[in-house]
Amino acid sequence: MIDHLTDDPLAVEVQASSSFNNCFISVTNLTKLISPRIASPRVVKRTDSFIRAHDLNLSEEDIQRVIDDERTDRETSERDGSRLVPIDGNGDIVINALVEVGLAEAGDESSRWIATSGTAYVLKKRPKQQRMGPWKNAASGKDVLVWSTKCIRNLGAEYPVVKARGLINASARDVVDLLRDSSKVTIYNKSSLGRKDKVVLTSSVDSEAKIMSSLTKPPIVRKPLECVTLFYARQLTVQDNIELDGVGYITVGRSVWENEDGRTGANSSTARCEILLSVNLVREITTTSGQKVCELTIVTHAVSPACIPLFIGKKAALTAADGYIKDIRAVFEK
Image (cartoon, rainbow, N blue to C red; front, side, top):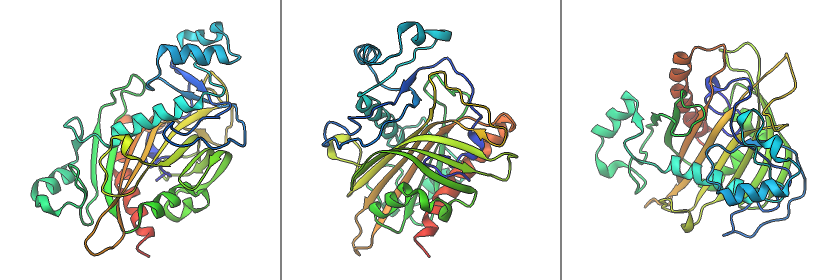
């Protein structure tokens, strides 16, 4: 299983990079990463990276503004029929749009999500009062709930979006701190060969943005899988329009590239992987005993390696999501 923040628990659903006719955004000077609701910290470093924007809620005005602000010209933007949306000093619109996508997916309790047979049985048989959180389909006990759905975005539509949910005996802050800490990935991810923070763009007590690079070696692949990801985490507020029972946090991740074509230099020793969306929604739950408990909801959308048949990748993705929740839970039960 791969680390959900960068390598993603759906190890079998990542693919070596290829060029897609979709938007990319250059994350070159993220001076306004934090939502306007939160004071923007000073960005200490600069990085030239590019991120897909095919599903981000960017208006034509936003797109035009960032094109005019960046060195990339219109001819480059329209190459191969794709719109490249470069950003320099406009990173806030990218991060906030990605958070919107993550919250919408993680908080969606509609019927578009198809439960696995095990999850459907649990939800049908358990008493309503047994669930912990006040929201629909909240987790309870030791059960891990798993769903999948078709992608409603135009890229990677043939690969499922997977969601999993379970309780962790820890505070929301402790869980998100574990997920943020690259030095601790191997504690809960036995397939990890390590994760490094390439560039920390901004970091504070309640938020962080960085570019991370990781290597994993799942048993079903021959080469180690490399993921380079833009990762962002922050505390939730009432303005986020997500049901909470206490303090909550959101992390979002998406693969980034070194150039505006979405290509990387050849490296025969590893396979570059693409994570289209990685979300961790961590919500603390109020208990009568005062025990610290939180619910972790993960969402992942990734592309299967070419060496793995699609039907195998889809099945393994559900298993990996279940295992990811259990492995995080185990860290706090030692």
